[in-house]
Image 1: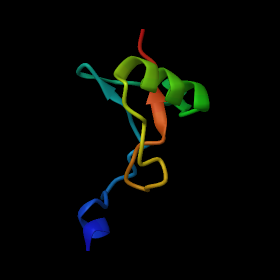
Image 2: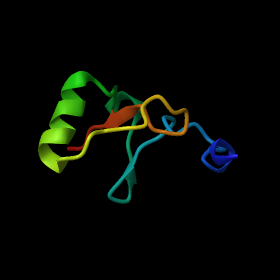
Image 3: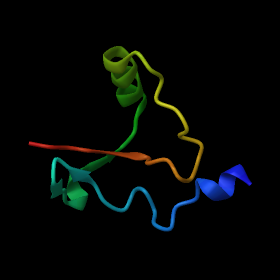
Image 4: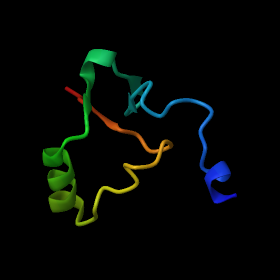
Length: 63
């Protein structure tokens, strides 16, 4: 039953919303090993749940 609570109606990779603005699809990139290492170095937390469908699998660029 836990997986039903975490299911999303919309694909979490469809859009990016950062600081009150939507980003274009060209500004999205897949999460790579480099991104995971950078996340760990900065936040001191492992980027997890990438095996779950409800977790985002992209990162968004900002300018």
